[in-house]
Length: 191
Length: 52
Image (cartoon, rainbow over all chains, first blue to last red; front, side, top):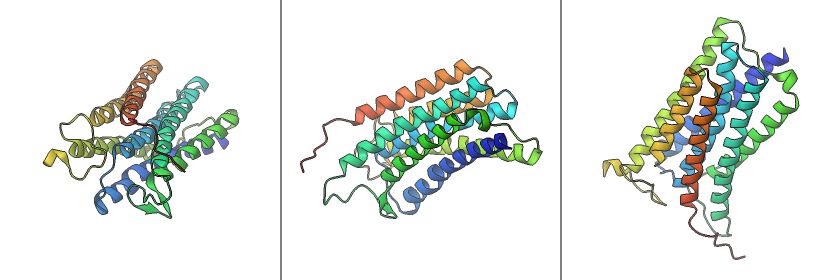
């Protein structure tokens, strides 16, 4: 029972980051017309790197080959990705921490997206800490029901699509330049 | 550079899905993570202008 809960907790972790990456960010970028800055893009990378840990654990569990070593490897991916992403969002928070600074982009519930990104990375670190504390009890076991396994594979492939979509979008924003400008105002690929 | 790093992350996730080898997953994650960090370091060009 707890092992199935562990499996679905990892699925929830992946779904949450898919929601943040493809939902909220594309809403801000395309819906509100905000151009993500270079540091915003690096924080997306941190979220994806962290999510790779969840994907690794889920794929191994679905194959029936998840053991303690592979579970720890996946959790290690999640921690390192979260630490990398947190360092990036802390840098951006500190860039805009001076009184009177309006910050970069819009805010949600009073916090800018880079502040929410830091919150999400801290949540990942706490989540992984709990999984490590109770690794024996929560070591994920994939469900046997076909619909549940199919659903999990669909979620994994939605994540793949999310990474690919981000790659295309950032290519449009960056064009054939090596780096994004500090304050992007257009899609370089289209002039 | 950002596009290439997203490509590396995409390659990592495909390796994780299709390859059984643990070392290959670790290697691809490591390459993507270090590339992201190097890009981040490129964008950190100055000390923070904090004067309270």
